[in-house]
Image (cartoon, rainbow, N blue to C red; front, side, top):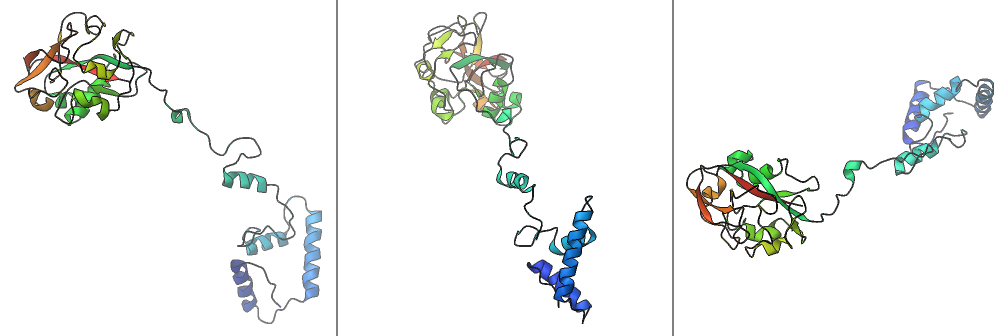
Length: 273
């Protein structure tokens, strides 16, 4: 009669073999004799499994049934611990973790200050100068690609007003600027926090803070209260018209004090943290 091997796949293979050899029944005595022969082969041959072992493996799918049981009569497998470590994410026998975190995944340090620094010089078409299409994205890209950008910063934005939804007056909420001291790159205190900048006055001028060597105009497009001015080179997308600019030597009117043609080339100011 045919041998029963648990597992649907193994059962199908064995039964198919029985139908190909009709009338070939294996008596219980023959099965026992075959079992003894297999044991003898295992004892005599240390180089690997005997022929019968190989046949059993082929029938049972590599030594385990479809239900996940271990090889019959094989005993516990020394490699089971390694397999468990791989599938559960635990450490393997050699002590190495299954997964490791890279240095890139380390949390970023918390900022300790907001830094204002001088950005690049450009005409009024900042959208074209930054190469991002969008004027805000282009201005921020310019601020992120200058030697003056402090190494500690992970976020940088241009101090410009574009429209009513994106102006210096609402940058604290728009960009989640932290409530920290505002400093020059060298540590000179410019104001106690970013909100204090919005009263229009600074503790020191940008010249005294070391951002400019002497009096110089820079783009702002902003009224004295931090809100957008209609004169801002068509929201920084054109060299036509005018924009409001400010004087770096003034601590009392850093938002703007002059109207400048958009064809001129002036620096922008940037803030980072």
